[in-house]
Amino acid sequence: MLIAAQIFATGAALLHLYIFWLESFAWMRPSTRKVFGVASEDEARVTRSMAYNQGFYNAFLAVIALVGVIFLSTGTTAVGAALVCAGAGSMAAAALVLVTTGRAYTSAAIKQGTLPALAVITLIIALV
Image (tube, rainbow, N blue to C red; front, side, top):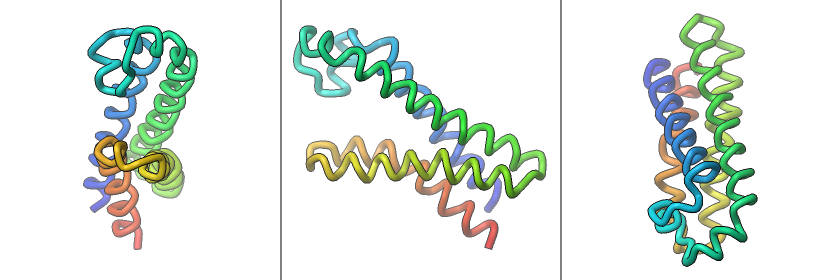
């Protein structure tokens, strides 16, 4: 189960690094605007600095989860578990918050929140 938790946490981290890239560096691209439902280039320009900041937030959570996976894989279980729970748990919680903003975001929340939630759940099962 510990290996499954590491796989889920790594997947969640990689997904959030991809989101980081989209939000922080590809925000003005039409394909990125379509992913996030940004209607126009003007709207993207107005929200660019917010997206840039949000992207780094996603990157930091990904790094926390990945460092946790590294600690878990080296046998430093307590530190690794704490970091994976902090990083992946925050990702899952953010997905729950996204759902509360409207039904239109349910699909995005499921995509963003499933891997981190599975990481936390399998980690807890592995450690109990």
